[in-house]
Image 1 (cartoon, rainbow, N blue to C red):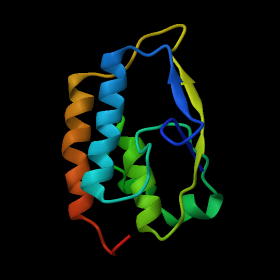
Image 2: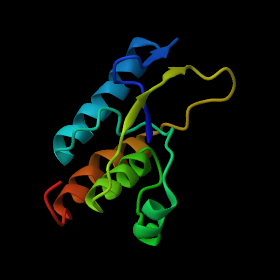
Image 3: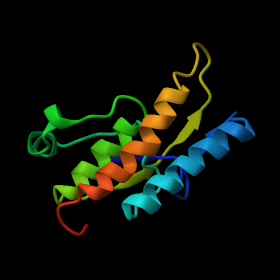
Length: 123
């Protein structure tokens, strides 16, 4: 299960236009390059069944930043499991600061095509 901001009933609250653009753009980029039907690949609210985690080679996960979210969802699909999106409304944090950095953005931009090139089977 994946908590999705970008399915009917989901959304974001108190986000500025730049953050909305970056989030939507990142999801569109990942969905398009990876050719999958998941609307919110960058979301971090996930629940995995034990057998899914046991089937994934977690030691080979290379991503650290937001690309980690994309990589785990993609590997789940690639392993033949189904990913279901349920709507969530995500609010801006009340404390703390974003961990987003140029390094994290660059990792995501480069990791996604590498994931696609490593595709084993048609999803």
